[in-house]
Image (cartoon, rainbow, N blue to C red; front, side, top):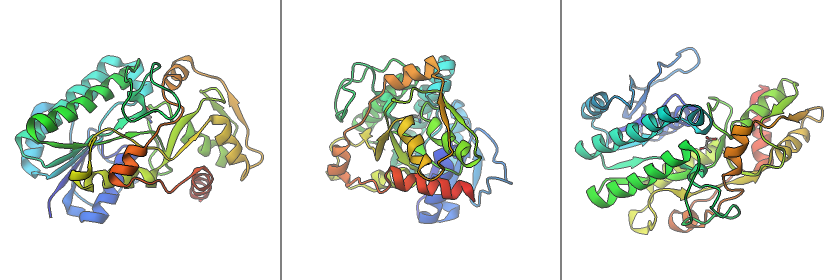
Length: 314
Ligand code: AKB
C-alpha cells in the first residue's frame, strides 16, 4: 500500500479526513501533519503524526523525502475571515505554502495531490445564482485570490509536469467534531452549539444571506472520490464546483427551531464578513462534478440539522 500525507490534519476537515483515510488505507499508511501539536486528550491520533509548517520549504522537502507518500491531501490554509484580517500571512501560507507542496511533490514523484478550492474563488462579478463551473473568477478577498491562484497552479503542475492535481470548490462545511476556524461560513456551525446550550445566538451575517453548504460526511466522500476518480473521464480535474444545500441564516435558524422551538437567533451583521459572503455565490451549479465523476450529495438541510443536534446534545 502506498502512503498518504495530510497537511492541516488538525483542522476541521483534516482531522476527520485523516480518520477516514486511515480507515480506508490503514492507520500507519496515513501521515498526519500540522503546524500545531495534537492535544492527545481531545485528539487521539492513532497513526503517525509529524509537525510541519508548510511555509518552511526545507522541512516540506525533508518530510516528503522521508515518507515518500504517493498522495498528498494539502489542507493547510488560512480561511476567509482571518485571511482578510492578515492578508500578507494568508498569501504566505496559502500561496507560498502550496507552492512548496507542489514543488516537493513534483521532485519526490508524488503521484496525486488534492488541493481544495472554495466558493471564495468567485467574486462579485460572477453570476451569483447557479454559478457555472467555468465562469468569471475575479474574487475581491485575499482568501479568494489565493484560491484562484492555487487552482491555476494545480492546472499548471498537471500540464507542465504531469503532477495529477485534483480538487473541489468547497462550500461551508458543517460538522460537530472539530470546530472550523476563521471562516465566513462558521456561523452555520456556531448556531448549533448555542442552540443546544439553550442560548440565543447573534449571527454576524444578515438573515437573508444565501450560501452553499455541505455536511462533513459528504465533504469527506467528495475529497476521497475525486482522488479515486477515473482520470480519463475528468475534463476539469481540479476545482470542481460541489454543493449539497443552500440556506440563509434565517432558514437555518428556522430548521433548528423545528427541534428546539425556544431557540432565538439575533442578527448583528459584521461589515467585513458580510461583504465577503455577499461576494460569494448564492448557489453553485455542480453538474460538471456530477457528470465527470459521479458526485452526489447525501445530506440535505433537515437531515443535517437532525444529525448535528443529536450529536451535540449527547
Ligand atoms: C470560509 O468560510 O472561509 C470557508 C470557505 C467557504 O472556504 N468555510
